[in-house]
Length: 198
Image (cartoon, rainbow, N blue to C red; front, side, top):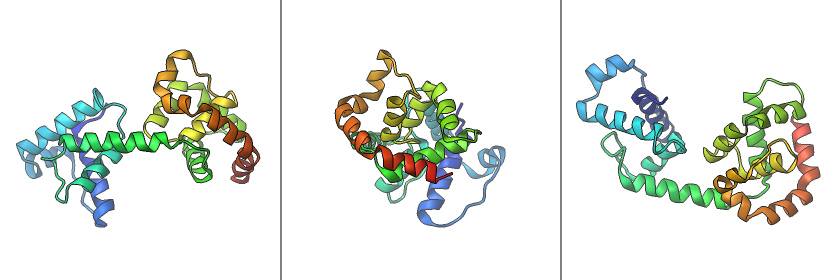
């Protein structure tokens, strides 16, 4: 469950990253009493409600980055500006359409999975990760893992996709044959990359 304080922290982290300056983290009680006006608190609450319901598949950090890229003075007032969600959706679709077996993204995805799973061998890590198909799909939708990496897991049988899941993975479905040929071509290199990380 995402709280207004979570939204505030992500906003401040992204702002700090973009503006290259730090910030002092306060407790929510201190912020709501002393630092934030009613309008800002209401916008943070509304944003948290959206991220918990309608926008549950949206990566909050990427959403905030989109806001900062659109508005020079992005703040809590402009947090729910419709231009942000439109641009976010456009960027997300563009990113997901460009599915390929990319070495760098593959390594980045595997590192993300490896940090979540406490196993010693690559095979055990991928098997354990594949057991929670729903989480793997969510990680893909949130751009935590790459589409090429998810395709690799599906093709090697670590994740079993059912017919109901296909609609959520439409870009993988549309690029299936190309991805299959690319994976066959790069399989040796991908395996070498994975085993070289250990």
